[in-house]
Length: 397
Image (cartoon, rainbow, N blue to C red; front, top):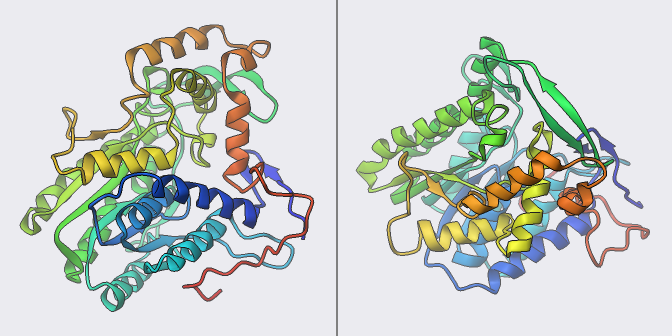
């Protein structure tokens, strides 16, 4: 079929297999061009099909030579419906990993469920024995609690009072004022239950009980802080409460893993164009301004550059990671440089529909968003027929 992008709000309902494969292989090439990392040998990535999770899988295999198991919840193609981008990303990753002679297994299902945890444990026991790195990189808007069956939904809302600021429709370039009403206590509770650290802890507990965590194991979860500009809707809002819980969980897991000489960290990463961030009010405009400034300064990094630096310089660099006062790794340090944020604030005050292109990288944001789904990738002829039915080698559809 000929596949074109179809959108519903900030979600693309189609994906292009060849474009997704090209994007994955571009990230692999970047890692192969860098120095090898003396890192983990057997890695579990929970949330492995897009964004930082996918980058972690690529760096683990092609930077460290590690075997990987990736857990994600993606949809295969069906009839005239394409698979999700994460499905195509996973297929491309496995293909390249296997060609490189490295083990790569994928599990497709609800990572919040006890069943998927047990399936993963059985696979580790059969193929790896133990894992020495566990990455937790889930980004889901909802969760079915495995013990109570409660259907939980997260929201992106401020707490205590409404929040009004600029927002951009990155498809049209139109800037409008947006007001978001405050969350209820129930919405706060459910957001923490979906996006906080409970499931991360459940995973580590289950893996530990099954004795599949190696001596000296490291576990990492990813988070974001961002500038004061976005704090009311993000870090001081419902998502921020969930991230606080995630960081508290890291401290609990650190104490738990000390018996194995293990480590647990939260890494604060840079703002990027992702399916998740596109849904957060204010953030697309902030990222568009940030990208323009960081590219002008030669400071810009994407997912793969961020995670390679995290592995090579912080986690497996031969010395202790550089932690902030709250014990977090900060690879958002380039984004949060004082002069970068001062320039963002300056442009934020004056940006409007007329000067958006001059002040921001809205065109780069829009292109990168399309590329998340395999579109607008150089070298791909989107007028040609392509086969949407792509198999992931380790998964029977």
